[in-house]
Image 1 (cartoon, rainbow, N blue to C red):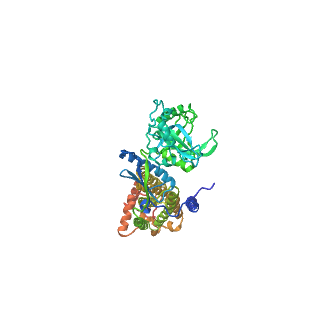
Image 2 (cartoon, rainbow, N blue to C red):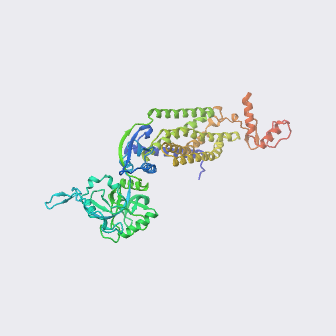
Image 3 (cartoon, rainbow, N blue to C red):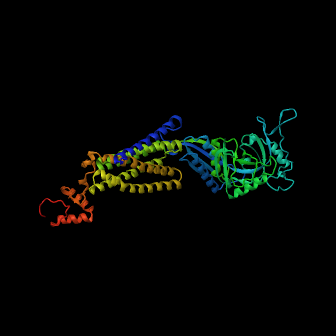
Length: 583
């Protein structure tokens, strides 16, 4: 098998880079044609504007909201928004209200995540009534065959149980007053009322399911959403592992919730319908009321119902990130303009362009023709970064803020650092007398360790900043981390392969000054095994500078040999070339 040459390796690396670029552009093109992608990155709230939602707490008379409750609500809502794939959102408090600002126009699922308080409760069913479609829930069919409303409950009806309830399923809790209120309860009129979500946990609750097909009297809360540690959504399967095609939500209780739920299911399993049902109540509405057919002792029940994939995942996210400490209602929803606008965007782009020009000028001045490799590498990094940003905007909801643009600008300097380290290593090898082809390979082996270490530190800093920060700072950290990874890819698959190819050309091998790889200008003194030569004589300050540079880079053996030759001694080594005359 033929040995792989540097040229073959170079072309292989460049081919891989081309395949990656073509693949990424093809994926985004497919998104433009059949998805909601575009050829321009989405902008964040500070550059594009978006939607502002003000959430007001639903309070009973005399109830107040503490700062701790508001802080907890802000943290949970922020987690929900992040889980929906929306980035660069701002969640703040304004008095007792929570203000959520989202870039662009949010979809329905995102709004549901924000607006729903996800106050989850598990209550036993005391009694239920199946409703007739198209008929109000507070009516009955009279003797005349007409729909007749139930009378308003008589205030004089007994509201105190005849005996003290022994558990949450005790039917003695259903007093005449409560049953009369149950009959007169209108599901449609009370679907969004305060009474459902603010009902005391220790009292029975009258409510309906989300589909409006059943009306319930529920016992006190036995397990709350605070006892949940996790939740996920997935397709239901049978005992044999076959898929049913029905979506379900799978909560996971903590240690306390597991013990409580085991006690509840243990009691309900021995009762008759509907008392053997437990209602899963979300924001005052029953989302499911399954029968308890066995004791669930592992703390991992299944919530099933009329779920779609979207609604199941939304509910799972709401439960996973915890129930809000208080319920909220949407006070207003308005479109807001950009907080910074196009002027700041233009300023950021101009700053990036100036930085890029300065890097180009410096590299051409310092490295002459070799600087074109830096420019080409920067172009390759820019193209790769742009298409990655497009895909992140499409698939992950990423939006480019002014802070994110700052991260991209900073990355220009970090990217140029990699090339400078590599080129300086090549120049070191040339000073030691290597040919260009050999210097490229040896320089790469030395440079890549430094590059990997530096980029590892940059990436670690970006990750830590992203994890600990919030808001626009996370956008800065994300773009910084992405460009760091892209920098390594470009150096591996473009910069080094290009140097391998250029090392084979006569132009760069000639060592002309304009190539930036002139051995004489670099002060090279070593030409082969035990063979030395004086630096090329150059008049003036340049000669002195080259001599000093060469002297600094001599080994101890080279300095001794130079001293012997320069001191007029007749001592010479066998390998030292002579002109045939005595010294």
